[in-house]
Image (cartoon, rainbow, N blue to C red; front, side, top):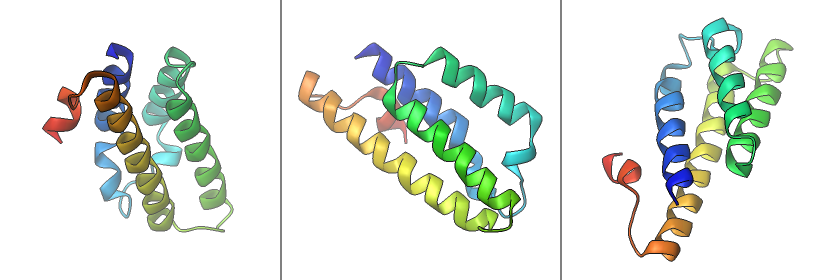
Length: 106
C-alpha cells in the first residue's frame, strides 16, 4: 500500500500543472521529459504509471504531427490520470478501509 501512496503522490505532483497546457508545451520541455522518464523507470512495476507514461508519449507524438491540439491532449491525459487515481483509491480503500493521505489532500 505504501507503494500505491507514493505513486499517487508522485502523479499528483508531476501532473498538477497540466491544466495550463494552453500556454505550456510539456512535450518539448527537457526537464519534464527527463523527470517522466526517470519516474517511469523508478516505477516500472506500476501499471498505472507505465500506462500514463505511454499515453503521454503517444499524445505528444500526435501533437507534434498536428493531429491533436495541446489542449485536447491535456484533457485526454488528465481524464485518464484522474480515472487511474480513482481506481487506486478504490484499491486502497478495499485493502485498508481508508483513503490515502495523498488523495485526501487533493
